[in-house]
Each structure stands twice: as structure tokens, then as C-alpha cells.
Image (tube, rainbow, N blue to C red; front, side, top):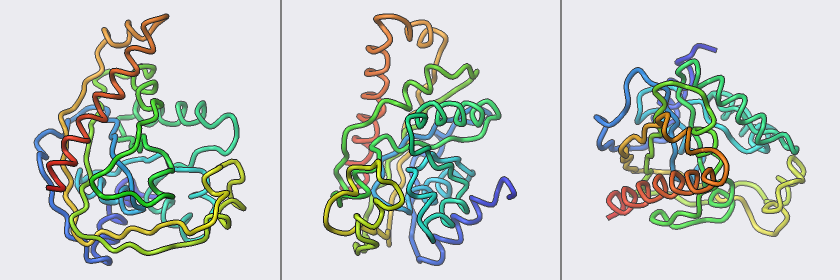
Length: 240
């Protein structure tokens, strides 16, 4: 697959769905650096939206089941995503793969809210709590010129429908407790969407030195909350 194929795939998908995208603060996108893109997440369209907004392929970590379900599997493959493992090695394999990509100066994308906002419909202006894996990755990765880029996806007009029964998805990933319930997987399609790019957060040697011993948790929490607050503020700006 050509390195630009995911970007072309993303643009074709948005064109096919007639999605209008508005981009703000594009001057904040780091140049010639390793970039970890962090964003809120409600729709299967979020990955192609971000690639189109940043005009670059982004390698996204995605849930295990997305690489197993027919049709969805073809979409995530076309987007260049790498599904996470289903077993206890999930975090370790994610770190290893993401570090390799960042070292080669490819953009890596993470949705720290995890699966829940995809499975339980959420309002466009709401966000869940952030998991801290991306902060550990940023602080653990030995990459020079690494920036975390917080980005908010603010839906302005959308269509909400249902995709597949949640319990059907449990056949593809029995380890996910969110699938063991009645109801359908929501399907959010953006008609008009704003993408607001936040200020990059550069990882310095001082951050990595603090990521040791009893201070490590404090650094991780501060970094996680900084990115969540930045995205939350941008999301309010975009939605209103």
C-alpha cells in the first residue's frame, strides 16, 4: 500500500458521504517532527476526518474487533489502522508498534476515550474520561522532537442510525464487556464537521526524567489532563 493511500482513501470517503469539513488553527501542525495525534472519538469517520484535516496519513490504533468484522475490517485496513491485540499483550504490542512508527516520523493517532463513546451514543459536545496509555507511550518513547497534538472533532450536523447488534460483535471480541448488552452499535455520519487543532505539547528530556519512580504517575496524570482539557475547550469552541 502506498504511504499516501490512507489519505486518498479518507478524502474519497468524505467526498462519497458529501461531508463538509471546516479546519481551524492549521498553523499549529508541527512540521518535520514525530507527532502523536490525540482526539475525541464518536464516529467511524473520525480517522478519515483527522487525516484529511492534517493532510497526512495517520496510523491509528483501533479496537481489536474492528479488524475482525467484515466491511469494517476493509475500512480500517484501507485507512492504514493497526487493530490492537485481543489478549493480555494488547498494551505491550501497541507500545511496540507505535514506537516503531514514531521513530520513522509517521503520525500515530490515538483515541484515549476508548471504545465506550463508539458503543454508547454521546452528544457532540460531550467527552468521556481519557485513558492514560498515550501519555505513557509519549514519555516512554525514545524519539527526538516528539509532539502530542490534541485535536477536537466538533460535529455541526450529523445523521445518527444503528449499525449491528452489540451482542453480534461479542462473537468477534468476547473480551469486550461493552458488547455483552442489548441494543445496537450506533453509527454517526457527519454532514458538517469542524476540526480544531490544539497547541502541540512537546515532550522534553525533563519530562522523561520525571517519568521515573514515585513521580511517574504525577507526570502521566498531568499530561493526560492537559490534553483532555485542551480538546474539551476546543470542542466547546467548535460546537458553539
